[in-house]
Each structure stands twice: as structure tokens, then as C-alpha cells.
Amino acid sequence: MSSSPDHVPLAVLGAGSWGTALAIQLARGGRPVLLWGRDPGKIEAMRKLRENRLYLAGIRLPSNLYPEGDLRQVVGRCDDLLIVVPSQAFRQTLAAIAPHLSPSTRIAWATKGLERGSHKLLAEVAREMVGNERPLAVISGPTFAREVALGLPTAVTIAASHERFARHLANSLHSERFRPYTSSDMIGVSIGGAVKNVLAIAAGIADGLGFGANTRAALITRGLAEMMRLNSALGGERETLMGLAGLGDLLLTCTDDQSRNRRFGLRLGQGKGIAAARSEIDQVIEGIETAREILALARCHAVEMPITEQVYRVLHEGQTPDRAVESLLSREQKTERW
Image 1 (tube, rainbow, N blue to C red):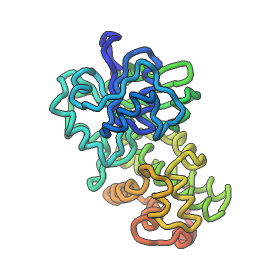
Image 2: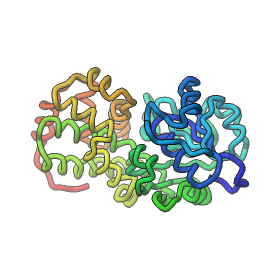
Image 3: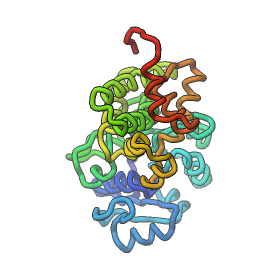
Image 4: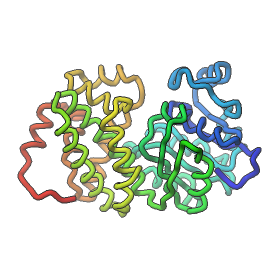
């Protein structure tokens, strides 16, 4: 990730499916990669088995990828850190690493969502915790962890506060089958990565109700319109959301059942309760809390997001999926605009 000598390791903080997949991709470049996880037992199992059997069973870890449990040592040995934890753990992770950062340490993240309770973009949280001058970057795009870990062709967007950092990240991740594009629009990349999880739940609900391809296409298109309105209000660039971090990621999560958020929505549409659906998925479903934060953020900026609002009502106010669809269809007629 940096211009450091090749023996200086890269660090990935977060040993879930996405963190492990990104660590594997970084290791393909030949540099040593340290993969930190908070559960010592799982880290030890990864060391012995040479795979993340819980999340990416059957995919072997490269020999230059080292699972580690000591966060302080990992931070101290690396120039650049890639954080891949759930959004609700993002501030906590930054607080844990802040005392051990050197002035030159740079921080990137592949976490998608907003901070719970404050509806802040994660870039805002990072600047609060580690300062405005430190180079920061966010990685997003249409990606499923297993496909990246398997080396299937993938493209992502890296948006950074410093162009040089974006280029270094892109060089470190790049391979014959992994293509990163760079950007300076951290707002747009962040909004795309957050809102798409809410819309994937909506698409899953619609499919679970049996509404078909027409409905799914309409939800994706009008969902993109909501995403773009909020992005514009926050100062993001429209073009960003027509690319990988916006439309690309939205299409992926709304149409493929590898998406946890879509699968969760499917179960709700099929009549299962929220608790039962969460239990069956048995992984973090970012869209549940993100729906609350996105709606709050939209209201702060007077942005209309009717699909997001109905998903919020299903998840947090007890509205039935059928009634949510009725509410959307009964809205007054209007011209189509973004």
C-alpha cells in the first residue's frame, strides 16, 4: 500500500469474509500481509488450518498471509492499515489503534455503512479519531468476498483524500483479475456503499413477495434516484454513482443471492420475522441499522427517499412488507426525475 520496502508488511484489520478476501488479494502481490482478528481462537484456527473455515471454507491462505491477534504489534509493524470491520465497530477500532499510529501511518477502509446513532459518514468518524491531515481512503464496489478470494475477475473504486495514497492502494491490490479504479470522491463512494444495502433488502422483500422482474428493475432504478439525491445534497459527484461504487454495487446486491441483505429481505418477503431471518443469515446485515441512519441523514438534508423510508418502517416500526409496497404504490403521481 505504500512506498515502503517490500519486506514491510501490509495490515488488514478484521478477519471476517471480506477482510480475509482482501488480505488474500493483497498477498497475491507478494508482500507480507498481517490479518488481525479480535477472536484469538479463530485466529489460531486460521494459523493451523491455513484457511478461514468459518467464512471462506476451502480457500487456502497464501503463505505470506499471517493471521495475528495482537493489534498493537500489527499496527506498529505496518505503514498502512486497511480496516474491514462492521460499521458499528469502526469508531471503536480507530480508538484502539490511535495510540499506536506513527505520524506517517495511512488508513483505508472497506467498511460500508454509516456510524450508528450519529449517521456520520465513516470518513467523518476517521477524521475525528485520527486527524484531518492523515491520508484516508475508502474502497467500495460490486464485490462478493468469496469471488475475490477465489481470484474471479473483479473491479472496485478507491476514493482517497490524497491522490498518491489512492495510487498506492490501487497498485497493491491490482492483479490480472482485480482492477481498482481511483477517485477523489469519498462522499459518493461512501453513500453508494451504504445505501445499496438498504435497497438490497427492498429488492429481496419484493422478490420474496413474488413480484417479479419488473418490480425489481423499478426498485433498482428508483433506488438509484434516491441514492443520487442524497449524494448530491452531501456534495458528492453524480458520476461516481453511475460507476462501480454506485450502480455497479447496487445491481450486484439487489440481484444475487450471495448478498446477505438481499437474502434477509427475501426471508421477510416470504413471511419470516426479523429475528428468525437474522438468525438464518447468521452474519452482520449492515442494511438493518443503515436504514435508520440513512433516513435520519436524508431528513437532515430534506431529501426524499421513499423506498428507504418503507424499508425502515418494516425493520424498525413493525410495518408489514405488503403494507410497505402499498404505501409506495399509492404515492401521488409525478414526473420521473433524479
